[in-house]
Length: 183
Image: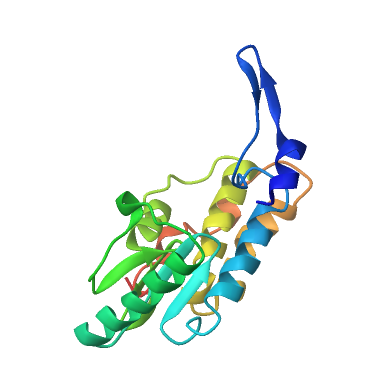
């Protein structure tokens, strides 16, 4: 953060006046600003051996040797802009990992089995709010469900009704997910 901007986000407590020396993520445009920074900084790696979303980064390689080279390049880039990583949030040398609510591996992107299990374990909805919760969870897994729009239509029709809630019109939803999601 520019030194002249520090006073713009200062705050006062009974112990004194404080200001941030780095941009906190709580500011309105902080995430977008940070995303622009990492896109610019890692432009030669993104899409090649790295994927980045805000402060989540994945360095991807085919072999152990490539992994070491790709990590060296990443660490050198981080060092050049004086950016550091939190070691507690880093994982190295894993064949698959959770990334942005999905499982990423050499096979590609897969549904997170935990998210699928949450839906399967849901009790039958008893209110419109619970159906909305269900449809939101289904939407998050949309790319892994065949004919999801067609098969989810009964759920959305229940939400749209203006009169009282009636779940009896919708077939019990657990079979909707049986054998459909690649987990």
